[in-house]
Length: 82
Image 1: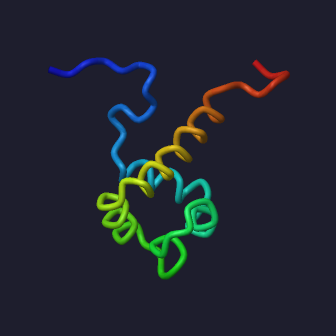
Image 2: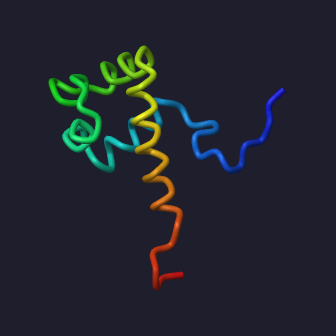
């Protein structure tokens, strides 16, 4: 039984999609500054990042929080625009 979650920006979004979006928008270097973990700072790759984040809840939560903050900033109009 699935429930609709219209106010949850992570609903239906995979960790892989989250990472791909953040990497495309900000790159591994910026992600490594925000979340200083080796899979972002030393020989970064999508595969190693997914493996680490799936095993490490605190790091995954930080990445998801960054994604949600980005999602909100993209969806909300800037002051003075429509």
